[in-house]
Structure formats: structure tokens, C-alpha cells
Length: 214
Image (cartoon, rainbow, N blue to C red):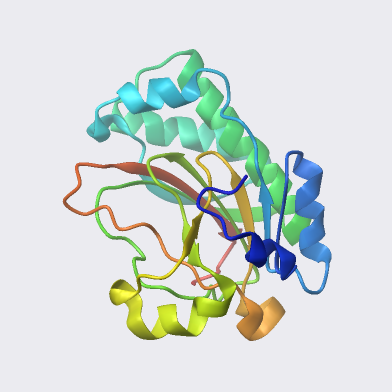
């Protein structure tokens, strides 16, 4: 199940989820604005990431074809001083596999990858994405949040004062979002979870088409 999910949101058919990667195919349906692949963590990876000092988490962005993503992620890991071994390779391979998956939906060869260590309130404002398709995954810490679909206008208006129902992607779940260019104002209003001052460092992956600037 979705973390802190409101079942009415799924009934509205703008949000869909499943336990297999094929559920992401539903993003092609006209009314679907967010498809969620509810998947388990790659074996052992969650505990390994949680045990790492925050300053050993990779943090950077690059543009690459899917075949080159694993090597580029490894480069970010080397710069961060992330220990070499099975789990680092597992992380790089997972990002690469998700890049391949995203490329199939976006029909683009070159992709923009952001793998970020976040200990501040990045993208804390509720907003809609102004890109075509965006894929995100949270490997460590709390994940992307969105209000109950009937509360979107209130969340946009009140921002940090919003105290209504919130959904949150489960850790390691894959969220594939349609942005405003594809679905207009039906794009999902969402935000990154506020973490400043909480002693939390997230590890967040975002994949876009090359040259998207949302």
C-alpha cells in the first residue's frame, strides 16, 4: 500500500500503483498522472545505505545514455568516498536499470540523471512538474509527498501551513509523473519532504529527458 495513502485518491484514477514494473505502462492512459511501482528494496541495500555517513552518499548530476549510467553513478560514488563493493555496484545497477526503463517511456536516448544527497528543504514547496515525464525514487530517508487530490488548491495556496492529508511514496518505490506539458493542471501537486534540522539525509534519484529544466 501507499504510505499514508488516501484510498479516494486511487479511485480518482489519476494515481495508479502495482507490484510489478508493468504497472508503469498505465502512465500512457490519458487520465493517469502518476504511476507507482511498489517494489521491495534491492536485497541488503537499505540497511547498507542507512549505515553510511551522510558525507559518503553520492551527490551530482549528469547527462548520459542508459548504457553509460552505471559507470557515471560509480564515478559519483568514487568522488563521495562511498565504499566499493557489492552494494555500491547494486546501487549503480539499479539506477541504470531505471534509466533504461524511463528511456522506454520517454523515447529518448540521452537522459538527465540527478542522484542527490539532501539534508535541506529541497523543493519543499508544493508544485506541479513542468516537464513531460519524470521518474523519481528515494533510496534513503522520506520520499516525495502529495496532498489528497481534493486538497491540491489548498496545498498550493497554504504551502508549509498545509495540514491536510498527505500521501508519501514508499522508500524504493518508483514514481513516474506526468508533468504539465502532457496533462495540464491534472499533473500531480507534490513536494519533497521537509528535512532541514532533523538530522536526516535523503538519497534521491530523479530522471528527466535531456534539457528538461523543471
